[in-house]
Image (cartoon, rainbow, N blue to C red; front, top):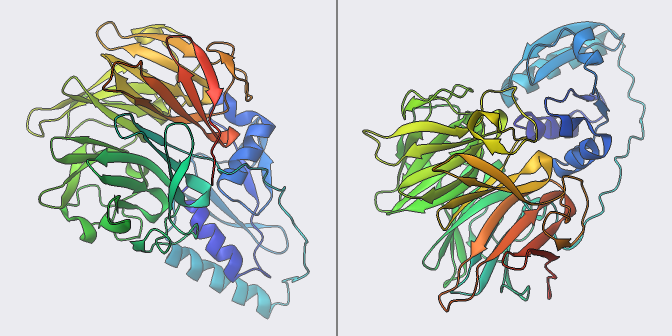
Length: 451
């Protein structure tokens, strides 16, 4: 995903010379379905052709070993270079510039217009919402309208109160109308301040709900790769922060881009790593030596941090005390053990979960690529499906008959007056927010009014 923004800039800069062809060689079964690949290409706003290499035929022909792999092909169709892993933009740009100059000298570049046009995206008032945050006492719902680059604020019944962000894909502080985000994801509410994981700006933004302003508390706007960096928030580069959780004056960040959890102190403004070496794996142990794999959702419960490690399809915990805290795995085995099996401990199989929430002593999470919502009891490490048939679609009704499409975020609205809690779900590929009446086991779709 870190390659996509670089490719977009290069495709614009070298529009007449460069053709990008994406080859999607899927790890997870859900990613092999052609419709899901199309939606993913639209979600990441790709404008170039994408091959669904479901059987790994192209992968094998080009002797690929890693995601991502970049292959460079000259105008005569010969492979002239290969790079495994991410490539900094400046190096990428310099390399392409030299190649273009060389082949131009030989008169080999054909600048004919290929007239490539991506399939149109059909969305509703929301576009691939990634996360949602419910505030029961305040009767507020915060929606990360991710591909519209904004935060939508409504009441719990769907009447829109405000929109935060102009909708432009940018990195701008200021009032609600002037501020700009870049594909925001997770949010956390602390009193009347909303913190936002501004994922593709690699930043944490602060929304003052009283003053109606946005500013930046951590991140430089550039992707960072230093897995040991620490310092004042605005001086440290982050890497794809995906979700946030608050506990006793500390904001914990699921730093998906470098496989770590970080923390930011509200009092001191210092941001630093909390758990994980930065290596992508599933090793338990002390916070500093454990390994994670694309943590994409985080919550606090029972004095622990709980998080979903998407690439290992696991649910894990991390201690809060930096000196003695440890990382443990509740369910999940390794990078290539996934499926759709309820059960206990090592018998459980998930498929790329992204969202998680603590509620009344239990963990509810979005088993995203299985299109389900599941419940985990930490004490017994048992997992049970509570919502979703497993088929993709947008169907309301009884919990296990309802259908979702890659749900990615969830949040409980808990009320002070004794009313039962309501569960809100960011149903990402359906461009919708779903509401669950848990006592009556009914799923409905939120109608946003005034957006």
